[in-house]
View 1 (cartoon, rainbow, N blue to C red):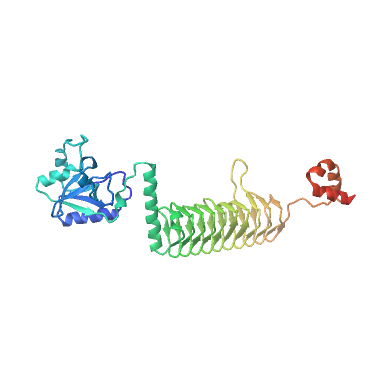
View 2 (spheres, rainbow, N blue to C red):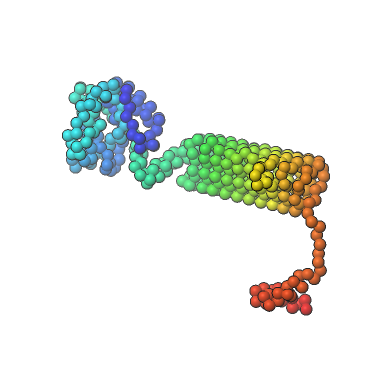
Length: 381
């Protein structure tokens, strides 16, 4: 058999081609054309049948009479033919309104040989929609995207406003997964049962285990997220991130090449790069793992049960022992032993009256730009 397809019909399903082949062989057919029906088939060649309903010929739009143009059944351009196709193709002439060689003329040549021609009708004419420009390509993409989301919903995925969700056909979703509006899932992404992905999150080449919650506006790339963990909102997990079970990654936290064990919490505004962190460690707001010296990246290891105070900077490469405590605002440039308290910040001094003396020297500017402060200076005398 010889199968002829068009290169600009990306919506044609494999299942349709299998059904076409089965129908062709069941009829012992010599020539089968794939057809569809549209209310207005303008632009397509028309399928003309005889009084008994047999396919008689295919007429191109330019050569059709007004009566033939009113026919709704159109030629898709997909044909299945027996081995005579190559020989008969050499008999095609250009005796038509356009002076062109029409492959559709093969149907008449087969009939002249005494062979029957059959039509296999599409249930969805969109399958043979051509994409000849960017507009057509966008229309085709919308149809494919709708097919993908509908297949996932039929398999048990809840998708809110599916017309806004983009899922590539390589993505695997488990049952009872929930996708909120605007979610984008790309590449080798696998999402296990019961996971929830918040609005406008973008997830690429990542694995989400059972019960994971990704809150809105989070970006994951090349990450693994353990069961019952939650991420976001506005979190970014970069390649090499591996989260254990029940890990909490909060808003504006970024990770890269980071392994966080079970129960680790990093709630706010942190950067965790090239680091491993043990069970149940708490990472305070504003914590930075300073992993880059301007030339090379350096790894750090933080033990289990560590408490890292807010606005701390850990200058890699560092080892922080289990159950250590890092005081808020510290810049840690030495290793911290197990169970130790690290305090690495300047001692606070309060200079009485300093503010009054400073602003008094700028009283003229303060009067016009900072009226509240000017009043305070007046009250101080």
